[in-house]
Image 1 (cartoon, helix red, strand yellow):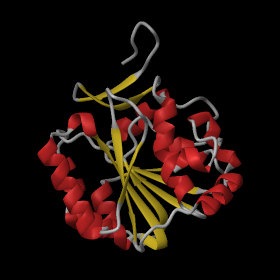
Image 2 (cartoon, rainbow, N blue to C red; image 1 turned 60 degrees about the horizontal axis):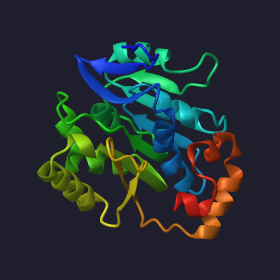
Image 3 (cartoon, helix red, strand yellow; image 1 turned 90 degrees about the horizontal axis):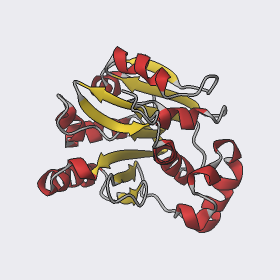
Image 4 (cartoon, helix red, strand yellow; image 1 turned 30 degrees about the vertical axis):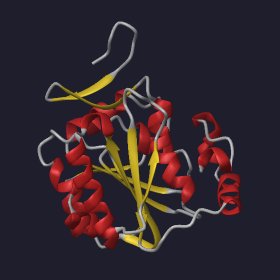
Length: 227
């Protein structure tokens, strides 16, 4: 749906999903924050596509192998309305993210899960201990998993349940905010097969090697801004 100001929003069954043409900076950060915290990612898997802005941000780095899994073929088609012509896009798979994780034998340096609307049918299965454990099996030895959560769409009990489930599988997990938004705060849960340590010098080296991602355009000017 495009409003009078030209802002496009994605709606599924008349329920607005996260992201719009006006939130590209923050949507891009949902790719960049975990991407830049991994020391040397090569294979990246996105669970959920939405507008496609987040995964397309990762795909701007041609050195990355980026795949996005989306349940609804209609969403894959609609995502073209949010991506600039000629902008690199990930490899797109029309499949159920939960089943794809369980059925695949591929391992990834980074897996990023979209902020699934809690009222969307089937979303609860993507916030369980069993699913988080299945994702862990798809991570490379130094792999990271980031689960984004729409705080403004979760009640406190649901949030506690999701965080508790995440920590059962990733006991050394961290939390990070996608932005400073008070209206639409998005929280990321970050964990891996091994405890993650984020030293300033390592983050500086990663930023220096990630110029293709243009992190400064998303408010990540240096290692301190990222951390």
